[in-house]
Length: 197
Image (cartoon, rainbow, N blue to C red; front, top):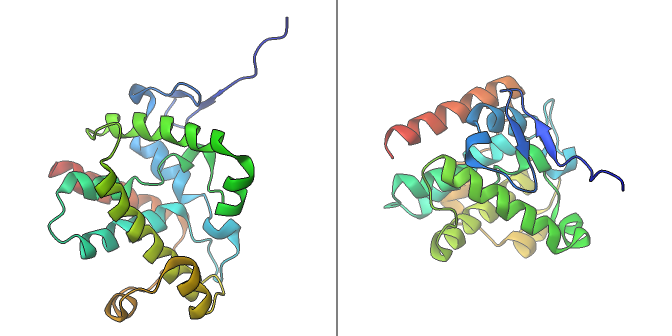
């Protein structure tokens, strides 16, 4: 009988993360920050000298979330920062690819999210209201990314992601940085939030 395929990945921290049965003890923020800093959003189809990484996107989503939910507790700001954290091992798939892969992608993402949340003191499952607010911040981030670096017209972005408030558009600009800088910024922001949890 053939052996089952390997479902774990060795992390740079030395941890061995089982993708099908992840445990919080195998999650390290340095691994997440490193992985996300090297995962390109928009399948790498963005203007600029550096890819726009999931780590940079996550920092922006947390910033937008704090602007739209001004009284948000620190734990939900942390949840916003970590909203795409599973992508450090499963990559960033654009929505059409997720739809083609089917529900198994969502199951894998949910398992990894639960382990990551528990590792950093959050509930395994984020309340629906908070998830909805983070998703709103995520869509506003996508609008900014789409129009500033991914070649979308504002009309296209409005249709796909919803139109953000003009003051948000004026206040926030996409910045492309080398992965090493983004990794450090992500790790630093995570530490700041953890201090106040």
